[in-house]
Length: 128
Image (cartoon, rainbow, N blue to C red; front, side, top):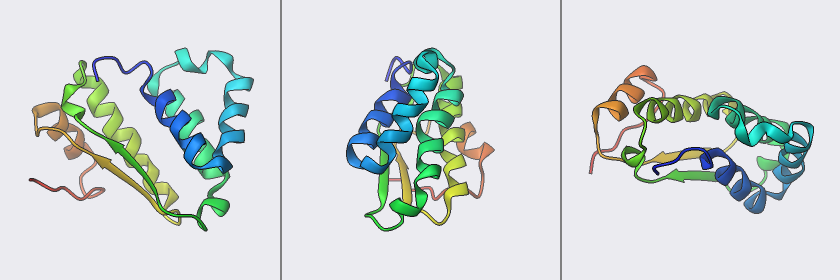
């Protein structure tokens, strides 16, 4: 994951395909702000993932759990991006009534450990 510029949009596109209820909200977010794909990762996450999931959470409660898997987080080139991704995904906890699971993998390198330390108590760690 050397480049994070397409990271959020890739997850949003997959979310729209797998959870059609979110597709309209994601499309509306892009239509209302065509430059969203060039914005900071935090803004993209809020408008393309967190916002759409929040808007259709009633519909999504009746479906299978939503699982987002990010493999090899340690392969991200910028350490700040690693910490930011961990923080952004931790914010999905506000959607407690939704069956949303985030599975992040990576070697326990310093940026990953620091990212998880900053959200202490909001995740379940698993060392293999």
